[in-house]
Length: 80
Image (cartoon, rainbow, N blue to C red; front, side, top):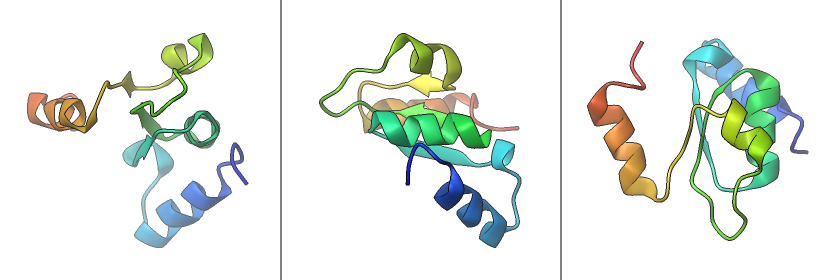
């Protein structure tokens, strides 16, 4: 269970990718902690609970809504 990153690590393994090359898009605090714990590129779109200072410091981005996530892709910030 989250915040253990096991489910994300399994998904990356099945995709044949390293965690640092995978985006985890989450709304929950525990899911975002799991992304950080697994070494993933974490992006939070908060639902009801705002991100903690720890999450803000350790996630790739915190977006207000899903349209902001599209902007991250279009800006090239999420491309290697």
